[in-house]
Image 1 (cartoon, rainbow, N blue to C red):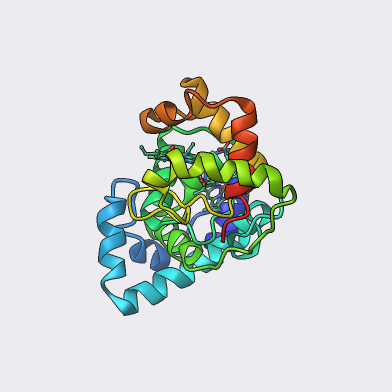
Image 2: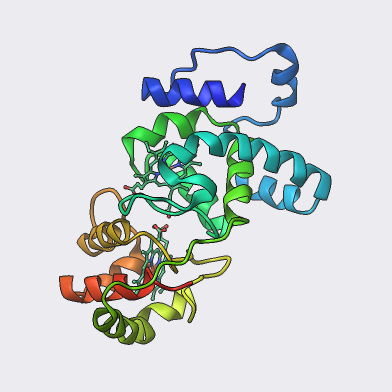
Length: 222
Ligand code: HEC
Ligand code: HEC
């Protein structure tokens, strides 16, 4: 049922819900309104193994739709669409929140995200964060070596030495190259669809060549 509703939102490209849920499903969802504090609910789910199992199953069903773009298990096959595999749950939740409230924009996903219940969001996030990232080797070793130098001067401070981030900062290791390039340029601009003070400061002095090098290195990290 969840999948049909989301698919409808995806096809419609809009948040109008065309399908209604049976009463039983609605009562299960009673607390899953947009007002639920996602971070608190995530913690609650993580602390209860049974609840975690059922919410993750919900998430896996939802992920069948996301797979059209983000790939099976969140390893995207398209260089301009981000991996979700292995990403930190708190980061993913925050991004879903941003898409829903308009701080982050991507037209094609917005209707879907708005149509998701909080447990569908949390389930998808938990499912993706538990998946392994497929390793890619750097196609240009000399460029990646330059990128490593840059990374070790600046980026590791927040994203960690292995690029896997932590509870506070996004994993960037193995992230898709075109997506990272675009994202870094957006941060550098400091306006538009992705504004973030810490990343604006970190990218301000980057040249396009620096970005290409860092992307070559980070994209090939495990
Ligand atoms: C039509 C293709 C498409 C579908 C379907 C789709 N996404 Fe996305 N998603 C994208 C693109 C493209 C981006 C990057 C948007 C940008 O930053 O401009 C993205 C970004 C994201 C991000 C942020 C990732 C990051 O690293 O910051 C999350 C989280 C996400 N999607 C979750 C989902 C979930 C959950 C679903 C399924 C309910 C889904 N997406 C379905 C294309 C899609
Ligand atoms: C001072 C801390 C800090 C430093 C240093 C930093 N970042 Fe970030 N980075 C962040 C934060 C915070 C976010 C999440 C921002 C958001 O929500 O948009 C982020 C997000 C990103 C993303 C987006 C991830 C995604 O999946 O969409 C990329 C790519 C990235 N950083 C790359 C880099 C690179 C490359 C460097 C070094 C040049 C760097 N960062 C240095 C804090 C930092």
